[in-house]
Amino acid sequence: MSAGKKTLSIVGASGYAGGEFLRLALSHPHLEVKQVTSRRFAGEPVAFVHPNLRGRTNLKFIPPEKLEPADILVLSLPHGVFAQEFERYADLAPILIDLSADFRLKDPDLYRKYYGEHPRPELLGRFVYALPELYRERLKEADWMAGAGCNATATLLGLYPLLKGGVLKPGPIFVTLLISTSAAGAEPSPASHHPERAGSIRVYKPTGHRHTAEVVENLPGKPEVHLTAIATDRVRGILMTAQAFLQDGWSERDVWQAYREAYGGEPFIRIVKQKKGIHRYPDPRFVQGTNYADIGFELEEDTGRLVVMTAIDNLVKGTAGHALQALNLRMGWPETLGLDFPGLHP
Image 1 (cartoon, one colour):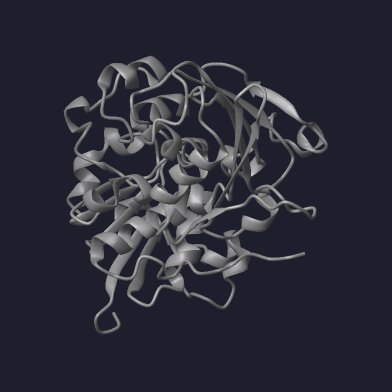
Image 2 (cartoon, rainbow, N blue to C red):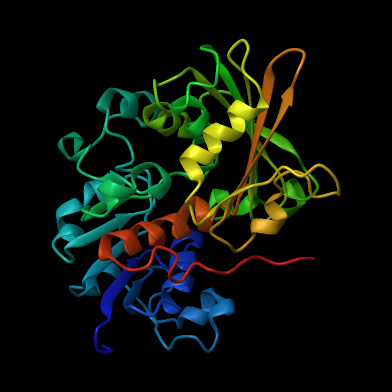
């Protein structure tokens, strides 16, 4: 290990989320990636699965049974696996970052509603929700962190300042999410088969989306929020639009003020609301590969209807990026370390 670096291992590094954390960690000046696991690709070099990492590492995948202790353990396992095997992994590192949904929620009843019975309900609430814009101070002291869901991240970042600032009327908020193919993970399915997905815009979860639980639990006042998820054939990115109504007598100035108060010092939040040009609102294309969340809005003056938009890369700001940002906070490193890629245009 290089002097002064912390060792980090990734469980499930052959998947998209684990692979993205690996990509970021390999460029991080204070991290030394020690081991990466994959049952399916054990013995194969990392670049066999992640060709973008050719020449960046000589690591080979190992089976999880061969994991050795490290300073930090990132878990990118299928839902339910980490919770079932908690002690085995918790004994390997003092700092744990879970990218699955196993420990995102605190309320066991809410977990039961969306996921079923939790195998370790006594551990719910022990993990800090790893969204720095909401829980920065708690993350600075957290040894166990639970990465937020990608759709929840886009929704929370767009709506949180408005509810915290009391800008919105009480009442239901309707959210539509346009989601890319990589959000479904690396394992193929009939729904992700190219002839079925290419050119398609398919509503796949009109009601009951699991990330609703995270949104409700983490928004101020636990408002009534309804999510509808639509699958697109983009490889990366999420575009979230939410519709709600402003308090009577409130204006666009109040919306701007709410965002400025919440996000004025945030390194990865950009408010996108231009008066001219073709890039007036957030677009997932321009955050691809980045840890930025672009947030915009438009007010319908005569009705008070507010449309909020958030664009993120589901694998970076939606998964691995905000988790690494949280780790930076925990370790006392600059928050933006390893996350400063600005995106591409065109």
